[in-house]
Length: 166
Image (cartoon, rainbow, N blue to C red; front, side):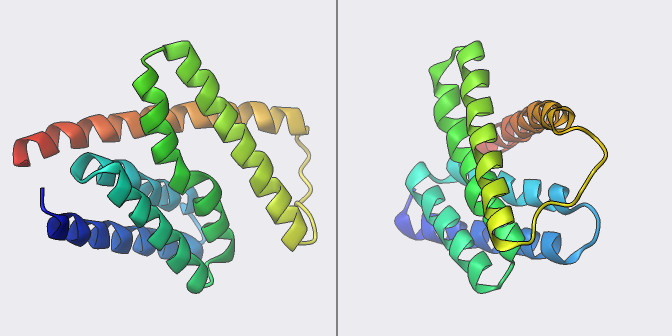
C-alpha cells in the first residue's frame, strides 16, 4: 500500500477520532460510548494501514485533543482509550488466553490508577458515592471485560469487511 494512501487514511482516522472525542466532551450522556468509538479508530487504523501509521494517528489525536482543550476527555484518551488498541494488538499476538486477560487487566488497572491520580491532582477530589470503593473497582473490571469483548467483535467485523476491499 502506498505511503500517500496510508497518510490519507491516517488523516481520516484522526479526524474521526477528534470528532468522537469532541462529542464525548460536550454531550451530557453517552460520554464513554463516544470515547469507545474514538478508541476503535486505532484498531481499525492498524487493520487498514499499519502499526506505525496508527501510532501517528494516536499521537495526532492526542495532541489535537489537548489543543482543543478537551481536558478530561483528552487525558482519558491519552492514558487509556487511545493506547488500548495497541495493547490489545500486541497482547493478543501472544495467543495465550489467560495471559492475555491478565495483561489487559493489568494495563486497565494501571491506566485507571493513573487517571485517578491525574484527576485528583487537577481537581478538588473525587465525588463522594455511597458505594464502597472495592465494589466500584470490581464493577469496573467486569465493564472492562465487556468493553474488551465488544472491541474484539468490532475488530473481527472490520477485519472481515476490510479484507474484501483490500
